[in-house]
Structure formats: C-alpha cells, structure tokens
Length: 322
Image (cartoon, rainbow, N blue to C red; front, side, top):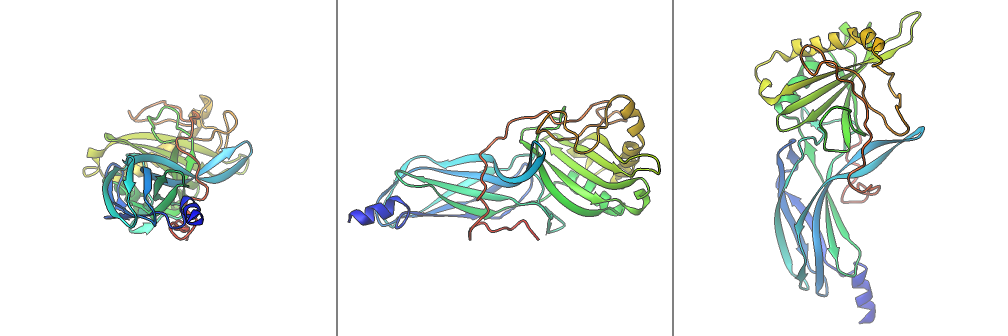
C-alpha cells in the first residue's frame, strides 16, 4: 500500500492528460479550440491547475555563439483546482486566442523548413510532478501575408529557410520576444545586386509591418552589405493592391537606398551587434511609409520559460524538420 502511494506520487498509476484540438490549423488573431481530456488514476488526485502554452523554437544569440531554444510565448489557464476521482473521465473545453504576432508555419499547405509550433498542456497535480501533453499546431498566413508571399513567388524568389530570432525590432510595436525571418534566394532579375532577401512580418489587429533585409552582392572593389526597408500596411489593402508591383518597388527602393542610409549611419552589416547579445534589423522605409525610421534590436526580456525538451518524446516529435 505504501509502495503504491509512492508510485502514484511520481506519476505511476496517477491521472493522465490528453488534449484534442478540434482543428490544429489556425491563423494569427484567430483561436485554437479543443478539449483537455483527463482520466483519473488509481487514487483520488488533487488537480492544482491545467494550463495551455504555445511553444516554438527560437534562435538565441549569446556573446559570439548562437543556439536554438524552445520557448513558451503564450500561456492560458484552462482550469483551477479540483478533485479528480479514481478512473473519473473529464473533458474540459477551451478556446485559446492566437496572438496576432504568432509566426506563420505553413504556406501553400506545406510546413516552412525551419519552423515548429506546438500547444503544450500542463497538468499540475498536488504532491506530484507535472504531467504534460504536446500537440502540433499549424499557423497559416492571413490574406495580407498571402498576397505578399504570392508576390515574392510571382517575382521568381525561391524559399530558402525560416526561423525565429530572439529580440525586438527598434521602433516597431511588438509584443512577442522574437520575430520571424523568412529567407528567399534572389530572383533572376535581382541576382546581379542581391544574394538573398529576408522578409519579416510583425502583425497587429490593424495591419502588418513589413521589414525587408536585402543581402547585397559586393563589387570588384567593394564588400557586400545589407540594405533594409520597412513598410506599414493595413489589412484592408490585401484585396485591392497589385502586390507584385508593390513588392518589386519595395525591393528596388530598398536596394538602391543603401548609399544614402550609410551616409546617415544606418545600414549596419548583417550580424552587427550594437551591444552584446542583441541582433536585428537596421534601415528605413520611404514613400510615406514610416520614412526615416531606423531598425535595430532594442533587447527585451524573453517572455516564457525555456523548454529545451518540449518537442522530445512520442507526444511531440521533431515535427518541424524535413
């Protein structure tokens, strides 16, 4: 009897948790619906709290090194304390809002190489270790994102990789402790001046801030460098703009503006650190779109614990890799 109580305290014969999403596909600003299903163990259990958390992998710079960590960036309680009887079955419904800045993981029905996203369920049981369950989540683009991504494809850019960089973009209203970079190989018509382009969306209820980082080629007597542009677009523009023409204009404006920005002290090379451990964009937008705004990392604390093992085991898997 004593041995069985000890096993229960460490999770053996204790309650189990399994979260079932009604639909694992969502978009920024929408919600994830589902049920947290509990099954009681061999003995009564005091459930202290049930919590849901969205987790993803983020690139983190420290000194001269860079590593990937798993970060929880959004958290919501589903239930407070209650008693769970032996073998009792309980289904608790939930609706979890998805933050507007949540990065996109899937485009054209395919997972972006480098992106992971999951919904983790924590079951805190009195006098016992927390139990957890991890479910894959797919975040699809909003219409404004789709139009801009369609334009990159129409212009001949090829997707390379996507990741999340820890930090904040200076001057851009941002609630999450990271931003997404979607990397493209240059289209043929830009290949003489650009190696790659990195696209960042910072989305809000009103619209999206679009930040471009163009990795420019060096000439015979000059080194390569990066050029930056920032553009503010309302959601309402998604259906009434020729986005191929707009994006082409952004790219040509951004790459041609480097000389002027350099004279003003902007346009630092990629990977430049204003101070240790902070990485980001520098540059400015033109054409009435946030003209003259310099971009860079303003630091910021990581919101949420680091969860190195969040995607390990049978429940999560390494579902973001190809």
